[in-house]
Length: 183
Image (tube, rainbow, N blue to C red; front, side):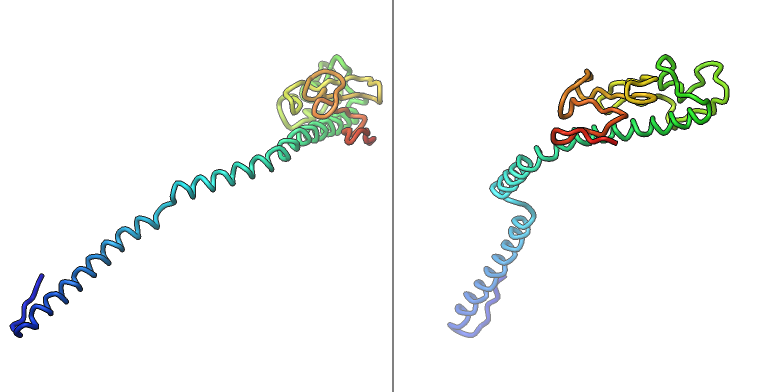
């Protein structure tokens, strides 16, 4: 909107000055609208840099974390074997003997048939849990290494092996760095 004031030839200068103020105000409004748009997001280059950094971190840290998964499975299997041991000891206190190999670990959940003084179930769960690699535990009584033996054959499910495939047993700890830790 232009306003002309009757002041002689100075009216033209005033008109130009007002026009400049209006132009500056319009420019400032347009800049404010576009600056809000620019502040709301990231450029493609910024996103690519962040994705590359995350990828590099994952490549460096990932393998170290995945190596611990196998150790965690072994520790969980060892802990489960120890829980079986405690339940078997309670069974023995009540019945006077450990379950036979034929009765198996199932005797910790249900009376194997006519066993006097059985006061189970001796495990909290309704089923005998599988080992960390979804294989059944092997129970032998009498055992070769004590009153009973409980064995998890590790990741490969067969006797023997190293690393994640090593056997986890009730009579010894988990083998670390080439040695077997005795309990």
